[in-house]
Length: 329
Image (cartoon, rainbow, N blue to C red; front, top):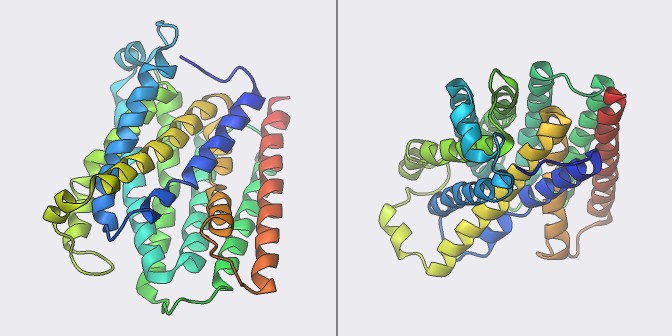
């Protein structure tokens, strides 16, 4: 299987993962009157398909014991369970995050959810696999959290959009953040415990867990949505081929980022890979700024928050990268 030959390549893969994680939602923006709960079925299929494609290509390059299928056969079954659970947890967290954005807006949902996810995910992953300098990693994560808050304030400066932030929406965002951070330790365990799964194998079972979880959680949210009216299954089949393809493409983009993050984590450790990958909100803000023109005509205050966000994120990435080199020296 392909693994990064150096830390520089691993770092590049993590940055690509952040770009993918921050870009997949653009495919949903391109759909027309397609409920997210329905879009999510295409998306979930897409993340599993791309994981399988990469597992049978990049993950099977040398046809040795580290290749995808031999690795799955040799790995402890408990590690497959860890990967499946991690995918299911992520799936619930992601659905709640989108609901939180609908209920409270990006200005509230991202700082609350992603900020909590950063702390929970990095701390728990570092406890399971203490790789790198804990001090530099902690400072980097703190800066990333500040960047997420600046991102929220930049969107907040655009106006509330008529949304009223309720206690329910805040609770949804908090639960989303806790769950979003909790999947990383399961990936760490699958990557490091006993006869471990390789990163490509983890990605396949992780995305399979996410898809299987949809049959319970997404069906529930279709019937009892946190926002809007119930969604009907028949509307899924009425959607245009373009909308279905965009959903699968969104899954391909997110799934590619996830595989790259897991592969890089096998080199850097999950805590560091996860921390840098969670700079996705910065990427999303760039799309909003330059493509969707969300900040057109905004106040100088929004611009200042954006500049601070980019500065904090870049500094956070540098410090987290330094955490690896310092901890390895």
